Length: 130
Image (cartoon, rainbow, N blue to C red; front, side, top):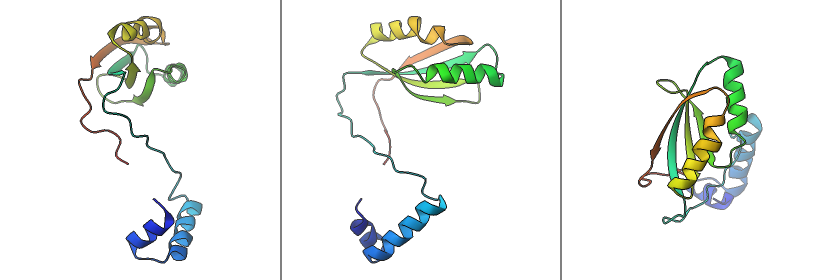
């Protein structure tokens, strides 16, 4: 959104709006900006939601896992979780055979992995809200 459009939406002059915006940035209330890319509805990838359980949950084991999973390009998101599994991953692959490759060659070889549970997404209902 442009500064002019934001100023109009909040009822300020563009200069007053920009001043307040810069103040929010300097004070840390606004920490950054994100570009949300609009992805086509019909994609050439399959989304797999993967739950990973580690054999140990010490800080060292969590750190080793997290450092290793960051290097996998197919893993688009990774969350440390509470509950039955330790991590929840969103994995993007071409198809089921490609996921089999990722599972065998990458996920199962991550440090400390005790169990992997996978579910294929049928379709996205809500994506990133931007």
